[in-house]
Amino acid sequence: MDRNQQLFEQAKTIIPGGVNSPVRAFGSVGGIPRFIKKAQGAYVWDENESRYIDYVGSWGPAIVGHAHPEVVEAVSHAAENGLSFGAPTENEIRIAEAIRHIMPSMEQIRLVSSGTEATMSAIRLARGFTKRDNIIKFEGCYHGHSDSLLVKAGSGLLTFGHPSSAGVPEDFSRHTLVLPYNDIEALEQTFASKGDSIACVIVEPIAGNMNMIPATSEFVQAMRRLTDQYGSVLIYDEVMTGFRVALGGAQSIHGIKPDLTTIGKIIGGGMPVAAFGGRADIMSCVSPLGPVYQAGTLSGNPVCVAAGLKTLEIIQRPDFYNTLSARTLELSKGLAGIAEEANIPFTSRSIGGMFGFYFTAELPTCFSDMQRCNQVLFKEFFHAMLARGVAFAPSAYESCFVSAAHNSEIIADTLGLAAESMTEIAR
Ligand code: PLP
Image (cartoon, rainbow, N blue to C red; front, side):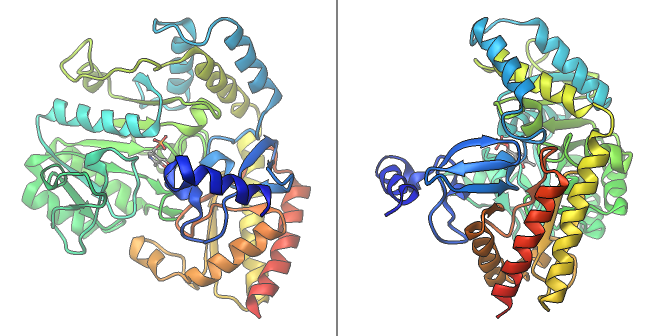
């Protein structure tokens, strides 16, 4: 048994499934998860001292590369002054200003510690503001693990959702309507019949949790138009896409101003920071100003905020996104070219520093398209790459991330190893 295996066996005796978040367990690809010992730049090392080019990036936050020296210095400096105060600090104002400068739709901002908290609080706020109970989400979009959001679609239109986790009462999930992504007709019909009861629409404007599937511009316009028409709140969940697909997130690409936005991942620079924010009239309903309760012992933690502030500073440097987007595109196009040569049905797409690849001939546009991708080929490719020292997310339903530390040489190395892997799985 190697050290990863030994640790996994030990972990399973005390941590459910051996992991503290389910997808880390390699459940959908099989095999042993790698226990990570350290990370630097574009690389992670496991407990066997094996090095991997990392396209997981801590599931999104690591956009400037792992352990960026300036971020580490900011964190150390903040830690020397105390780890947590439970009182306001100047840097909370500075990070909120930095966020609003980048995403002007976030007129007022409340910091929290995880994306789940951000979306859960935004939903509560939308319900409190509109005094309505029902919410709309889309099949395949993930918004964290709070009760009303852990609901996936029944297949039919207008069916109320069923909980996709044990422990969520049917009574909670009956307020969550689940509709197919990118389906304007379904959205129009739902608003026509239930519009007056709908507190909000929450959406990943470029979905990243059913692999990467962008909303069409017609779909985002329809969401804005219908929520305006019926007085519902439009929530953009940009926990993954914020500062990732472009500096200003998906909303800057689509030119849509959501009423509320949730962000996370990158604004913590690898530490637990997330936020929700938006229209000042809606945000003024949050406690202590208004009746919608929301709180957190570690919200705006000074060490985490220091990491986030420094990360936001780095990503605003000239050419950051031009270079990141060009490298991501090179990788995503390169993979498609290699698959074509190996005669494997495969497509890929990238936006900014995020990319998706799919073992299917047509680009998927919704969750059911994703379900038709070849899972067996994904697993084989995943393991062929891992064995060669390249780590992709261990599921065909995840997006992949490139960081500023992935230079041209690292991208070229990845493509070389992908060519070997595709030849291996094509046999
Ligand atoms: N929203 C989106 C779009 C996400 O991708 C995630 C996590 O991946 C979340 C919310 C939940 O964030 P967290 O895992 O920080 O609770």
